[in-house]
Length: 268
Ligand code: ADP
Image (tube, rainbow, N blue to C red; front, side, top):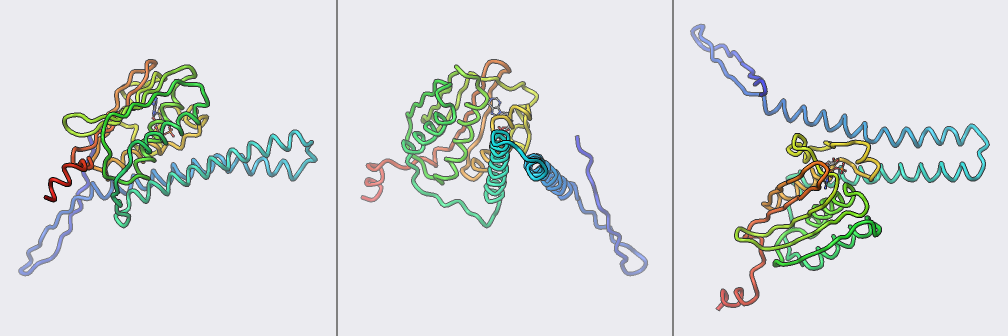
């Protein structure tokens, strides 16, 4: 439940009468609050790695360090630098996806190529620690290759990052009565029910330290949500803590590229 904020303007009118104009500012306030939260979260996320970098630079400047210690500090600083880069890239992606001045450029998306790329990125991230399978049983679609790559890639990389070594991850693309489904199923740590509805909020994480340890920015599922909004798709999350999770993307039938034969018949 949220209190509503009504602003009342009293405008003097002729014959000592007045006009009351009410304006519901609840939505404007909510957007403003989201904007403030985003800036506060983003600043905090950037400040943490920067503090580490500055701290090490100060040590390097003040003491004569041996080569091994200096190299280990350089390694840590590079990691923190990459973390900042990754976060800024995700923030820029998200702001582009939300911008009305950045329309989606639809093209025919070669699903075979896209899925192979998503699976190979996931295998590289897993470095042999998981069994990752890919099943393609559905047609190509119309959409933005890069946006879908980013959305599906985020779901697949989450499956790797939240599944302990030895677990299984299945990526499935298939057609069903109402359209297309892309399913990412893992046997990982799972998610308790109270978190599920909030996962696509920016910077919402069930476990901040695990997300950071595995290079998470906390923006992956917010990016997925925005890409799907632009493609008329939906996201369904089924999960049980300790057992694993399934993320299911549904795209409408209208996204399917018509088969060549049907196109030719249509032209005849
Ligand atoms: P992050 O960069 O933290 O992974 P995301 O927006 O991609 O950010 O995901 C938000 C949160 O959802 C994660 O921090 C994690 O707690 C949870 N999550 C996402 N995918 C999975 C998954 N496959 N298994 C368990 N938890 C997940």
